Length: 113
Length: 110
Image 1 (cartoon, each protein chain N blue to C red):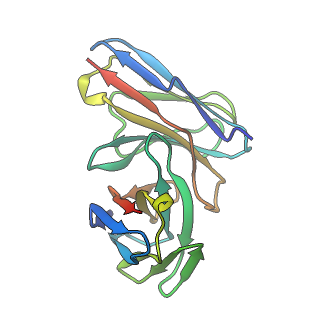
Image 2 (image 1 turned 180 degrees about the horizontal axis):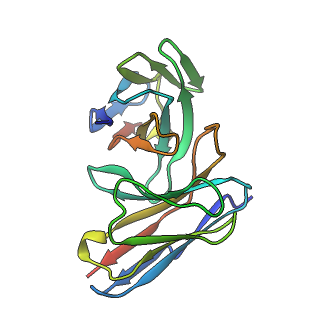
């Protein structure tokens, strides 16, 4: 069982470059999430998708876009990377309407120089 | 404003020395309080969900409790493998939004 798979694991971007972080889950979960984790600030929600075909903004959505490609896949795009987006990004999934806990991916460590 | 505060930021224990981690919260309409464990370079791993004041959950050396304003994660006779960062999160009125604390980094020395 793979759970939640994120790619890539590491990435270095130059300011202004774009990239897409990929996430896929194989647990048939309806809800998927993108978080960023910064030292001393905890995990902050960027965007989420409660079900296939829907997406909503979280706490810190500026500078990001998302696509729920199908039930399994939820991607996060940085259109024009900025140094402030240097962070560790986590994708997570959960069952809708009953929370047994998120299942998180192993993260993408992104550095913008 | 919904928020979660965890203390202490870091905790060093000797193997076998029991202690508690604190998670205080303010949230509109608490649906649940969650504890996660995070090892370096990995994603958080779900431990417990607590739904109402007075509830307790246990798993091996860990016991989580909940009051109306805070939760405690009690660690009894910890071992070095319990070393990790422990995260607390709350779920309020918006089902899909969870508010995470910044975590307590636990280091258990043999």
